[in-house]
Image (tube, rainbow, N blue to C red; front, side, top):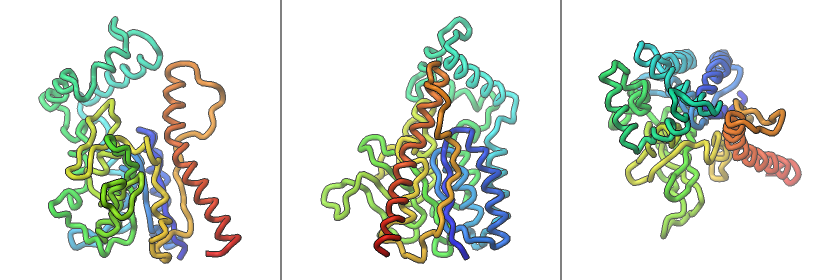
Length: 323
């Protein structure tokens, strides 16, 4: 069958729209219209990609399936929304604060950027608010991404994980950005199968040096992919660095699907991209809201477009010279 890899862009809660696309893809996989050999994602797109991968993965001695993946994906997003009254109040206040900042209007007599700026995740105000949220009835998994991931993917959270890596047929790539050294990073399930495929970038005395890293898949890596610095402290992974959102590097990662050392039979025949960041904009942005939206879209699209340009060039070379 045709081998397909699906890449999921990040873009905040807009990634919820990817659920419908992925559900239809999984229905076609179940109907054996093609083989899903790879998934990738960044930020909220990484959450979608992980849930589909987890539903398909062989874990706890049981093989996964497309229906399992659809159920896992939908259940995860259902758990991601505000349910309790306290969560809805928190959601409303956070939304109104961000909207006030975009609209350049005061909120409760205070300039909104000052409010948002005071909620630095490293600051005392933010830490105090986070500490009180459970006492107000807010679920830990609602505001704590690692807890949410551990609850959704217990076989990957176990120590050691109860994933049967050698029986996992679908590969997943998760994009993140290493903060201190500035490395583009991919957390790759293939490294869990074969540790020799790992690469820690421009390290001294290392035989292969790149400005990018390739590390084993982990829930910490997925949390890193969704770590916007205005909302979360950098995700620290022992021995592997500190990470922010993958939007700053790859949105989403695709190059590794076609890496030169990959087994040719494992490479996808086609790459499908669920793009949720608009490529064009109707005018030059001028308001705070429009500028911030366009900055986010450009940051999310330009890195992807560079990788796509490179792949299309390789396709032309293969067609012209063979290979």
